[in-house]
Structures are given as structure tokens and as C-alpha cells.
Length: 215
Ligand SMILES: C[S@@+](CC[C@H](N)C(=O)[O-])C[C@H]1O[C@@H](n2cnc3c(N)ncnc32)[C@H](O)[C@@H]1O
Image 1 (tube, rainbow, N blue to C red):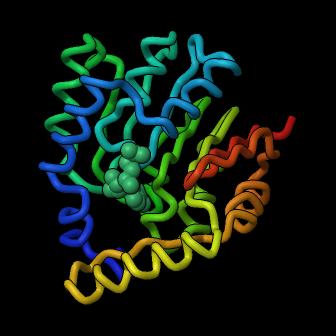
Image 2 (image 1 turned 90 degrees about the horizontal axis):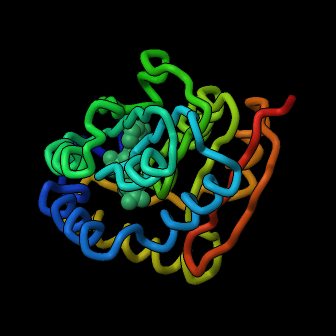
């Protein structure tokens, strides 16, 4: 675990309570806008029979939607254990528990223990981890076909807003930090691992990028 952040810090931000709130929202309203963009893009590329690896997938809503759309199996690799109970409940409700394997580990550190998949997803994860090249590089290495990433835009207002949020986290000794890794470096890292850009779509806050393994 890097110096800026500790397991305690991650557990505070991504608490059981927050996980329950997200699940409640998903049950009522479905996917949030950024997750829906990712699922729509992947469906447009075809998910039938594909395997999915989602890193930092939280409650696992994207995995559920892709399995419902025909994906074969999914693996979730999540750093904090706080989502496991509620994610299991959602899988049972959807009748999909036997098609998802959930692992709790730091993917950047333990990537060699995880099999590759046709589709790899990191939705709003890179901004929660200091060592972007290690995390994005491992994700790219695991993508047999497509890697989909979402991360915050780097604008003057995200620099100020996230800077203030980090000051508050520091003042409260929360042992957690939000990172605005430069988008160009994220894409360049994925390209160095054999992927080629396919999609770069700006939202208000989140960019959704997809890259495909070069033939
Ligand atoms: C902002 S949340 C996003 C959750 C979900 N993807 C979503 O968009 O709703 C970031 C998640 O990434 C996880 N995470 C961060 N770094 C990780 C790593 N190295 N390996 C696995 N999970 C990680 C955190 O535990 C957290 O659940």
C-alpha cells in the first residue's frame, strides 16, 4: 500500500455504509451515467460469450449488466472488502452468483494471481491509486481484446476541486488521496502495453476511454 493511503483510509471512503447506499441506488435507478456509458459502448462492440475482469468494481453493477447482456463470466478484483456482502446480495438477486468470482486484493500488487479476460474495466479507479503506470499497465496486460477506463478530466476546476478535497482529507487525517493523473499519460501507458485507442469520450467530469489490443 502506497505512503499516501492506507487500508483504513480506503475503508473509510469506501465503507460498508457507502456500498449499501450505492446498491440501493442501483436497485432503484439502475446504472449511473458513467457506468451506463461504459456498458453501452461495450454492448456496441459485442459482449456475447466474452469474459470480463473488473478492477475496483465496487458493488459490481457493471458486471451484472454485462452478464445480463450475454457475457460469459466475470471476475471482480476489489481492494476493499467492504463491498463483498452487498455485491453478493445483488448477484443472488440477479441469479448470477455462479458466473462471478470476487477477489479482494490490490490488483497493482497481485496482478499475476489474476487471469486475463477479453474485456477489462477500470471505472473511476485510476484516480484512487497513486501508481498509475503500475495499475493501468497491469490492466492493459490483462486485456485480451478491450480495456475500458474512466478517469476525471484535467481542467482548472477539477484541479481546484480535487485539490480542496485532498486538503480536507489531509486535515481530517483520513489517509486517502485523490489523483488527477494526466489523461495523456494514462493512454500512453496503455499503448506501451500493446493497446490502441478506440474511444475517448468526455463527460462533465469523467472521460471514458477504450483501447483495443493491436492485431
Ligand atoms: C471511486 S471507487 C469506484 C467504484 C466503482 N468502479 C464505481 O465506479 O462506482 C474506486 C474503487 O477502486 C478500488 N481500487 C482502487 N485501487 C485499487 C487497486 N489497486 N486494486 C483493486 N481495487 C482498487 C477502491 O477500493 C474503490 O472501490
